[in-house]
Amino acid sequence: MSETSPTDVMIEVIDLHKHFKDLHVLKGVNTKVTRSEVVAIMGPSGGGKSTFLRCLNRLEEPSSGHILIEGVDIMAPYIDINKVRTEIGMVFQSFNLFPHLTAIENVKLAPMHVRRISEREATERGRALLDKVGLSDKADAYPEQLSGGQQQRVAIARALAMQPQIMFFDEPTSALDPEMIGEVLDVMRRMAGEGMTMLVVSHEMGFIREAADRILFLADGLIVEEGTPEKIFGDSQHARTQDFLSKIL
Amino acid sequence: MRSHPGWFQWVRRPLFVTLTFAALLAYGFFLLPAPGAVSPGLLYASLAVFLILVLAWGGNVLSDRDKPEALKMIVALGLVGVLGWLFYRYSGAEWSRLSGFFLNFKVLEGNWWYLRNGLGVTLMLAAVSALGSMMIGLLIAVLRSLNSRTLNLFLKAYVDVLRSIPMIVLMVVLFFALPFAGISLGSILSTIVALSLGYGAYASESFRAGIESVHPGQIEAARSLGLSRWQTIRMIILPQAIPVVIPPLTGNLVSMLKDTAVAAVVAAPELLKKARELYTSKTNPTALVAAALIYLAVLIPLVRVVNMLEKRFKKEAK
Image (tube, rainbow over all chains, first blue to last red):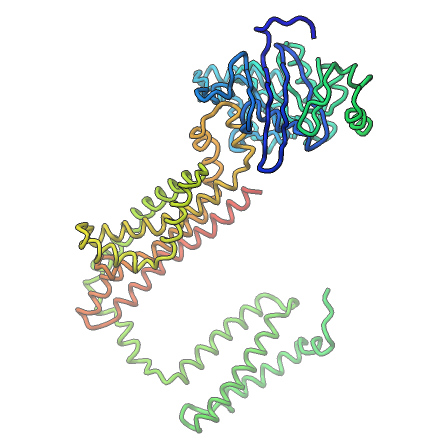
C-alpha cells in the first residue's frame, strides 16, 4: 500500500479483543483499511474471521480495544451505533432477507425508516439498485420465490440502498450452490471496481486474486500475516498460512 | 403389507362376520334378560358378556382396512345405537320424569330474552378481556425479548404465578378481598381484570414463542441496516411472529370464553348466572340445559375456526 494521507483511513482497529465467556476469540487485532481498499479476510474456521467483522459494526460487542470509523471511535459511550451502522453495509452468509417483504420492499425499508427519504425516492433508488444487480424483473418477488444467488444479490442491493461508505461481506457465497457463486462475485467485483471500501470474509481464490488489494490471514484470534494476494498466495512467510493454503488450493 | 397370524385371515372373512353378527342378534333378542327378571348377578354377567362380544365384533370390522368405509359407518352408528339402547333399558332411570324435568322448554317461554342478555354479557366480557389479555401478553413478550435479566425475573414471576392461580380464585380475590384494600371493582370489572391478567400470562407465552421463532439473523440484518431496536421489533419481528401466534391465541380465546362462566360466582350477569336465576325462579333446571346448549352453539364453531387457522398457518409456514 502506497502513501496514504490520514484522512484516507476508513477503518482503524486498535488492539481489539473479544471474549465469549472463557473463549478468547480475538487476541488483540490491529489493522487499518484505507478508502476504496478491498481487504479479504482468510483463515481457518474458528480463527475469528466472522467475529472480527461483526465486532467492527458492533453486532458483536468487543470486549476491549478501539475501532475508528473515519476517525471516530465507535466504542465511545456517546456514539449512536445505529448511525454508525448506516455507513456500513453488511451482507451475510445466509442472506437474511426479510421473508415477509418483497425484494423491493426489502431494499427500500431502511432508506425510508432510517434515512427518512420519501417512499417515491426510496422506490426509485431501490429499482435502480435491483437493476444494477440484474434483478429488475424480480422487484415484486418474495425471498422464498428467489434462488440463493438472487436472494444474495437482493441482500447486496438492500445494503447498498443506504449508500454506505463501507461494505462488509461475511462469507457471502458459502451458502450458495456452485452455479450461483459467479453471479454474486460479479456484483462484488463491480462494486470493487467502483471504488467501494470492502472487507470480505471469503475463500474464493479467484475473486480474491483479482479484486482484493490485501489479504488478512487471521488464525487463533490474531492477524498471522498480511499482504497482497500475490505475496500471500505465492510467497507466504508463515507455516500457519502455508498449511492452510495447501489445504484449500 | 403387514402379515397377520393365520386366524386373523378367517376372522375377517365376510361369512364369519355375518354369522357372528347373526349370533349377536340372537343373543340380544333371546338371551338378554329383561330388567328385574333375574337376579342382579346373572343380569350383570349376561350384560357384560354381551357388551364384550358386541365391542369385539365392532372392533373386528372397524379395524379392517379392506372393508368399505360405508360399512364401517353403519357399524359405528349401530354400536352407538346399541350402547344407547342398553343404557336406556337397564340404567333404571325414569325417562319420562327426567325429560319432563330437564327438557321442559315450556318454562322458558317468554324468558329467552333473559338468557340472550346473559349471552350478550358473556360475549362482551370475552371480547374486552381478549383485548386486554392480548395487550398484556404482547407487552410482556416484547419486554422479555429485550433480555434484561432483572426485568425478566419479575415478568417470569408474574407469568408463573398467574398461570398457577385457578381463575375462580383470582376472581374471588379481586371481587371479595380487594374492597377491603379500598378498591371496589364491581363484578363486571373484576371479571374483566381477572380474565385479562390470567389469560395475559398465557398470551405472553404464545407471543414469546412466536418472537423466538424468528431467526436471529433477521435481527442482525435489521440492526446492521441501522434500524433501532424498537423499529426492528415493530417492522421485522412482529410481522413474522404474529402469523405464528394466531392459532394458539385463538385457542386461548376459546378457553377464556368458557372461563367467563366462572364470573357467575362474583355475580356478573352473564349467561350461566342468568340461567341459574331462571333455575331458581322457575324451580326447574331446563334453563341450565338451555345455557349448556347455547355454550355449545357458540363454542363449537369457534373451535372449528381454531382448527382451520392451525391448518392454514401450518401450510403457510412450509
